[in-house]
Each structure stands twice: as structure tokens, then as C-alpha cells.
Image (cartoon, rainbow, N blue to C red):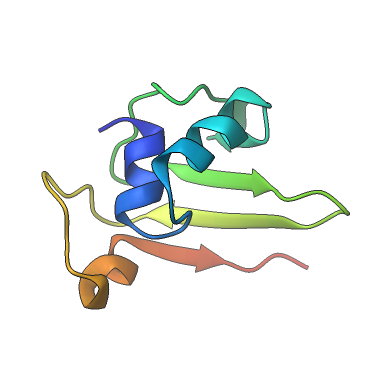
Length: 84
């Protein structure tokens, strides 16, 4: 699944266009490498999203759904990683 689509389906980012824009700016890395919106993501990948102001959100992909999922199940697609 494309990175921008995963970010939207999992509701990490609410709109796919916004996810695409954030990726285009180089603010998303997959497994430590800057990723474009079309990058294919898979189970176990680590996503880091730079929101600016030294705020980086990190996630591990637990499930890559084949289609849209209900809001109640969206959070089961990833695990938030807290770093110190």
C-alpha cells in the first residue's frame, strides 16, 4: 500500500492530500529513509513524521489493510513508539 494511503486509512493524517504534501516536503521517513508519497509500506515498517518544532511522531506498522477500515479499527493498524 502507498504511504500516503496508509497514513489516511489509519487516520494518522486525516486527508490523503495532506499526507501527500507532508511526504513531498520530506517530513516522513520509512525505516530511516526519506519517503515519497508513493513508497510502498509493509508490516513492521517504522514511520517517523516530522511535525516541526522538534516534534517527531514515530509509529510501527502492525497491519496493512487491503481496503478502508472503520474508524474504530484504524488505530489497530499501527503502534505509537515513544522515544525519550
